[in-house]
Image 1: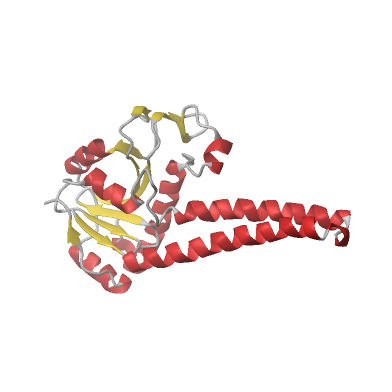
Image 2: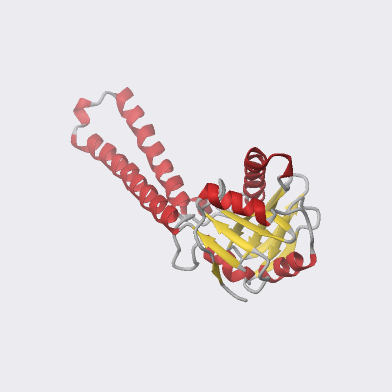
Length: 244
């Protein structure tokens, strides 16, 4: 598999998001200090507005921290693009991963088609909830996951939205010859007990399952000429072969 990673963009976004997160936390702390140091200068109404403002800043800082994780490794896991490379290593020399070049973070292109890839590291039991039309982690707690910055979230919706966005962008750049884009949720945790996703409208696969699927499929994909055109447009640098 060939990989094309826009490291300059990843580092730039990492720096911007980290500073924005620290600024939001700083403003929140300043607001709390102001209520303690100057309590007589604040009317009850102003104190209430300040309280809600501080809470909003803290929530925004948590959100920005989660966004930073798109570009940073964690203590217990690599950066998402490195996760994809590790999970799909050996899939074949006809596949290429583009990270941080297209309008979405990670795009896989090969004989099976064009895919937007979203990763998840959570273990346990995963299933497709047909009634709620969503992929769920059994036993997860939203508040705990949110504040621990390790929530399962909605990878199905995330991957689908990215596929739609990339599809529209490709149609704009390539016209009617643009291939369809498929969403893929890639599960990186070997401790996933069960994946009951037969009725899911998108692919939800472990690494080995994904490689087997990709090798067995053939679909509409980007031609060499189209990739060359997009490469010039996006200024894609030289790739790296990671397995073959």
